[in-house]
Length: 213
Image 1 (cartoon, one colour):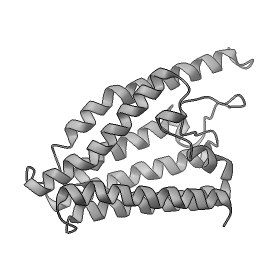
Image 2 (image 1 turned 90 degrees about the vertical axis):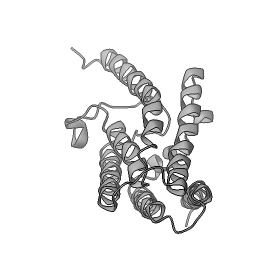
Image 3 (image 1 turned 45 degrees about the vertical axis):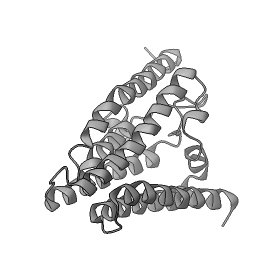
Image 4 (image 1 turned 30 degrees about the vertical axis):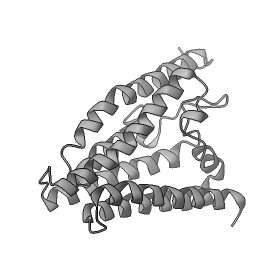
């Protein structure tokens, strides 16, 4: 195992411990079965994506390991990513508290369906990685970036955000909480800002291309 792979698996392990704490401590029990189901989907997908990138695109794996507020270059992006990071924490804690105090009564079938939606979101992200080696964790356009129009890009301009949006919306329901959807609503303005900013940069890059008409 090389240094990059060790860093990737260490990051996944640390994230697993952190997410487990954010779910089971507020829930007040380890018998929080929606939490276990969601973690199985999240880290099962994360492990498969890591294995795929390690074998097929180590350069993309390296780029994906650099993300978060500190990785952004623009102050506005740093602020946006900071708030999204805080809201992601809330996206786990609120449903856990919901489970503890029985605020919601989400049927098991709905929870399982939400798990499947989250899995579809991760599958879309896999398709993005397969087609686009420039899928950085930061909001940027590489100097040698090319316009991708195959795979999921033939259907959606920014499929990475489509996949991320699916599993974000599915997360509170998969964790057995309707109240957690309020956190998703709070995240929408920040997600839209990121989508708009990337679209603006992409359009500018397209116009500067000699192939643009």
